Image (cartoon, rainbow, N blue to C red; front, top):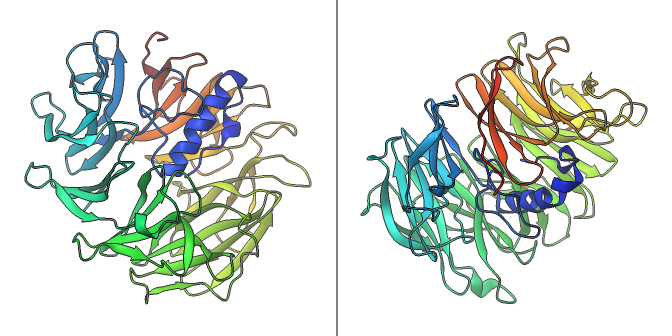
Length: 475
């Protein structure tokens, strides 16, 4: 869920990216965008830096040219196949499409109308004629954006106003099938009026969809909700028991998450079946007495959930089968967890960034999930500067990730087949790298420009098979 800011080491781009990244992580939406955007402004969230999605062999994204502005584009993974799909607001004005969400063979998204203060819900089948409005002008415009999720052959999303009600919506892709699902009664429970509401971290577990509702004004005003697709079956969980739910993971038809126990003020691991009665904490296991302890990540691998917890230079790796917790290892820094099963592996392995206090700085580590198995997998950056590997993505049989380069400000795209020998450099860039989705066995990523423009790239894991799909001038 995280992309380390230390990956972006050039001072000219670091500060804007941090603010964008923090906002993206806060709202629980992807930080990846498959297009080319102007430099991000400090202290603002750029809605163009949100999401893109692959459906079949086509990726849908927000692209730019001077004639049409920021509009709906698509790409088949080739330079000639990266083209404007439809100019939703004709002319140079932009529709700024965002929140791309795949449902079957269609993609849904939110885009501005000709009225700069209104936005519409759209869907597309990949053709201009098949790109149509589902609900016209029903929503406030950006930055009041709407994290969306595909669930049970429909999309679920939220609509809100600063001073109005907060609704959960659903759509089956038709005008009549786009309706409010439930009003989220939440404001009356707050000690003061919030700035905004956001529904985020949508996670399906069993027959339910869970999500977090909170505000941008306080960490503590984050609440856990669930829905079964009906108004009656949409309600808050654990109102009197915990605050600050984060890191939701679906496991064995239940939701596992981290939250602060209201009674003790301590961070705990919780699980729920979707009711207050079915919500419990892992009470026999104590993560510490301070909510300042860091929870870097929580991820599912095979029949267990793995999580990292601790102080900055004293992290611990744990796992649970849903019934009991098992301590695995201690390290200076467990972060950026990724799961990958290589062609030579019998089962998946966990990859992460860790710092060895006795030697190597932040480098690539691996574990098979057993106690005491964590080990340095490969030193990517020679010396003690650390490479800070992050952004682990699997495409086909390959694992891709990005890392620094000997502290010289460069960023390297790496690939691996699960062995040290097959863990090799693909290409070095002097801008930040963010890995996105895939088209078939090829990995898409963006290289963010130093001043303004960014570039969409694709790779098959070889230097010769790594090419830029499109570039635009600085704007």
